[in-house]
Amino acid sequence: MAGPAEGTYDADPVWARQLLDHLRPAGRDAGKVVAWLSGTVRAAVSLRDGTGHLLAGEPVPVDEGLAADVVGGRIASAAWDGQGRHVRLVRVGLPDSAGVLAVSRTAPFDRSAADVVTHTAALLELLLRARESAATGYRLRQAAADLRLAILQLLMVEDPVSARRVAAGLWPGLLDTDTACVYVVEGRPEDRDRIAEECLTATREEALVVRCPAIDAHVIVVAPGEAADEALRAVVDRRHDAYLGGSTRQRLACTAGAYGQAVSALAVARFRPEKTAVYAERTHPERLMDPAALTAWTARLLRPLEELPCHVGGELLATTRLGLEFTAVNAAKVLGVSRNTVRARMTRTEGLIGADFSDLTARAAVHLALNARICLPEEERSVPDVRARFFDLLAGPAVLAWAHDLLRRLDDDARDLRGTMRAWIAAGGNAERAAQRLGVHAQTVREHVRGAEPVLERQLLAGGRDLYEVVLAHLATGDLRPPALGSEERGDQDAPVHG
Picture 1 (cartoon, rainbow, N blue to C red):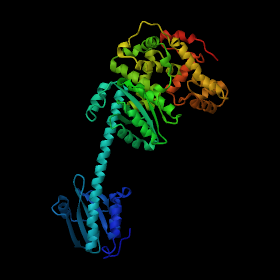
Picture 2 (picture 1 turned 60 degrees about the vertical axis):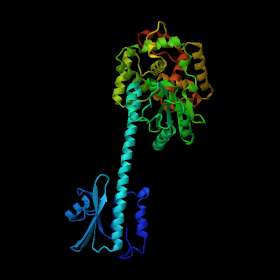
Picture 3 (picture 1 turned 90 degrees about the horizontal axis):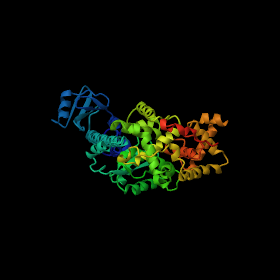
Picture 4 (picture 1 turned 120 degrees about the vertical axis):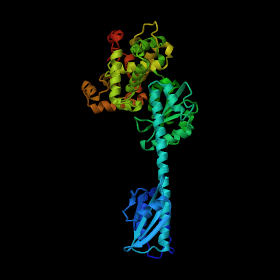
């Protein structure tokens, strides 16, 4: 940048305004300040730390003894002339030490030029200290965010005791509760950091607020208190492109299941004008089944996992629950493990309970059992003396009425949405295989499934809880054959299939 003519600094205050402009948020860059100084006083300029390392500018030959005196604080500044050069050294305080600003030019330094150098050194010191403070603040915020994620991951694997211990250091009392609700706030990915801060403020930091490691648009909130619901609704209400899904109140050990509920509710929220929904707001099939039969079937199916050492069984249950809700990659991000670990755990679960997770009906059945287990106290997880099969759970009048009512919505569409859904589920959610069976294009299958989402008020293509409910409805109405689950369930494959 061209500077004013020699001797005109006092008369022309432009340089002062230009220097102050570097304090604006968009201009806080030491390199730009040094370049500005170089052009303003027509000089070679360097900014070095105490070891002589160049921080900004270009190398300037200096008397190293004088430079050491300036850095050490024995003198605040120095100047000398020689070999056609005029050099000034000014001490610049750094966050944890000191450096030196060296300015070398062919013309002597008049009072105004010296003032420009002195003021620039002060501004550089201010910028460098502010940058370090900002960097320190960022590191602290990042460390707190990482710690919150670690606490969430402990809750996801049913270890609330360890989660409380981790939280006690920075947020004493945060998890001093037996139950909590889980919420998922969805907004634009580029707004997520701001939304997370708003959630922290709205809940007065009395909730665990975590940036979802799997989905960039999501913020997860584990809220022990009752006031979080209203506070988070207010956050969403202020944003036209934000949505909120919430779970029912669950034990802390069941955080993974509550998270799945919140994600399911979020899918409903996208279709509602108020942009919010809570899982309890809609009827779910497990609530319509005979409680004793459901408990017996769940306990019998999951018994091989319950008989494992506590930490091993807990890992398999938590991983399977998330693996059924999300892709292996996203489940791995939530749990903080590798996707190969997720797949290995789910494969082990398949072997233990005799299920084939490539079959959507088997996934829906196991998902039902894991949801039912959430509601069972530990003392009731032994196998009750009740004979119940999966097919029996779906045969109750309440479940049948729910299933027929749900799927009947598809019949009002001119397209054969119901037939497409049946074929798509039978093909394991694979549009190409379903298209071959139906004799249509794969894109037609996808469009039909996507068209069924607002009709059923459920998210289907993304998989997870919503899809499994629709699968259960098809099983209850006889549109699909029940899956084989363990040796005691093999006979269910002979149940009738309609259509």
